[in-house]
Length: 89
Ligand SMILES: [Zn+2]
Ligand SMILES: [Zn+2]
Image (cartoon, rainbow, N blue to C red; front, side, top):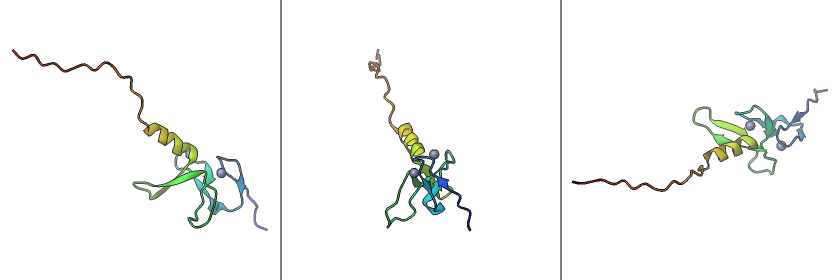
């Protein structure tokens, strides 16, 4: 009998018996649901991104969101705009 190693998604905590339904996060090394079939419904607890060097990179939803938040424009305190004044003699 094959070893029934249960794989558990690090995001939602559900266990899966098919390793192909899981991917490993490039950032935090957790395994998570990533539906490999575009034509079949499946669970996604992360996303795959085409990386610059390694081809497809997979990230869990937490790292995707962290990345997304990091890219949000930070609300910079708006100081009174100083006008650049040139003094011409
Ligand atoms: Zn999951
Ligand atoms: Zn992650």
